[in-house]
Length: 473
Image (cartoon, helix red, strand yellow):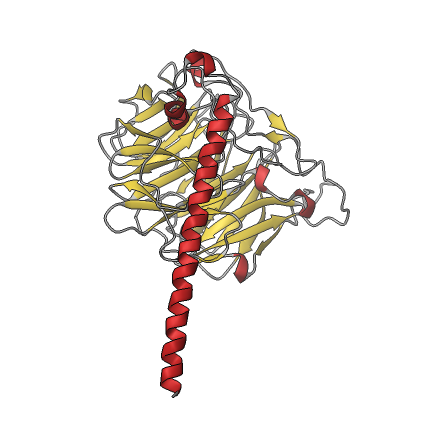
């Protein structure tokens, strides 16, 4: 007999929004009309694109800094136009890249404990696009490789360590590029374009390997992402403006493996994919729900699991990497949902009675170590992600410096200080001492400013008390 209900360990995934005191309140989320997620998270920080007068800015908050965020909280504010997309580096939790309407891409180094003052100087500014930059994505396995796509219909792949544009893909897209996604090893990219086509491109050979015109008939924006097995999942709209999800085999793009209609709504579906569990989460802009599907090898391939529904519509969404999840609570995904004035974490768990580590929920996942250096990748090498076990939870490594064979712009601050010493003294031991001295100075300055603040507040309190006693008389 055929089973009526398909068995899956993710059928009972339970989504729950955190309590109010664990949300990030009083944040003015950006109102830019661009269909990006507006939010990026990693195991240390949550970054949110916010409204900013006279330019573009985004907030970077340490994960533990919940509650009401002061209006004067420092932002990353080096762009002269609104920020459209941000992405954390998968190999360094303190490096984030941003693309903006001012046609530039900037890479920022966030201090270990978050921002104390506004950050307006990027580590490196990458100039090369002639129109606004709407898509930013880091290479999954190669160190310091960053991809950007602009409204000039050009894709540029940069070596961040040297600040150079290494690959420029022109004349492949006749219209605006909605999104770009790397495959698991970072050897190919797939793109969704306004001409309704999806393309699979080998960026180093600068050739289109596979292409499908009119993947979805509707005129509204599409999204395309690579799955772990090399297939491509797309979200888009039918001619009748119904939202669709389709699965494509790269070897044969004539017909999709499966297409399913979902509902009629005009919000773009943002797909978030977990390659370890093969679960795709679809978050519609303006929706108040998150739908999740499991991808398998058996027809119909894309199996609907469940929906997490809430009352408030979402303006954007951040998706936590596996390293940032709490394995003791069987947490398989965590979203950071943007409302108009706040960011609300949503935790997805699989209920289990046992308190043991659940191997089936947490296979080895991509760790923070890159498999290749940028130069190796540009020379044609490929590397799969270096996997780590989450058995004891992910323990972040402190002070991970970006090491590059050639001069690395991201280390310029350190090299400037060490230039004064003779070449013979430039040993590995001298750099940590310089760093610790600089850190000590920073801490002492902070303590001094706090002492000044306390003494000024004490004087103010004394003055107020005097005034109060006079009024009482």
